[in-house]
Length: 110
Image 1 (cartoon, rainbow, N blue to C red):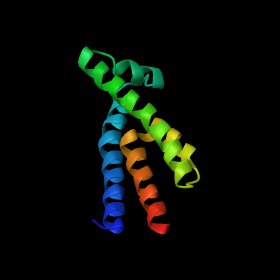
Image 2: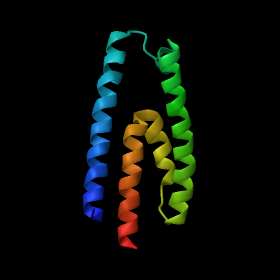
Image 3: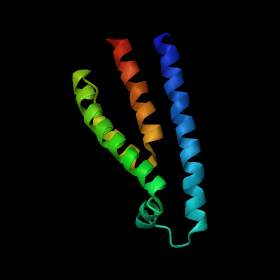
Image 4: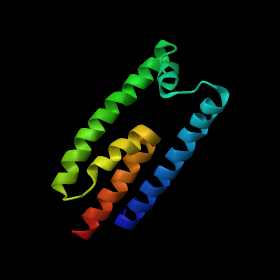
């Protein structure tokens, strides 16, 4: 697979990640007039299954931040910290493919 093909795949994955997460985020906001970050977090712990997935994603995010920092330094990529708010405000399903896209671009330039 060429670098361009990888970049296209990562870009498409980020777009899909945005759509499939925010479709439900917007539904949650519309269905709850008292929607807040706290209520969103509480909704993720309504049963053991949802709590398991929430904790799973939390661990993935922490590992992603750690790896993102070190990989960015290794490849001399600037703005590594932008992936933290992108993850927290948008979704890991967007931030991770965007990071991989930018990483692939950096690697193809060197």
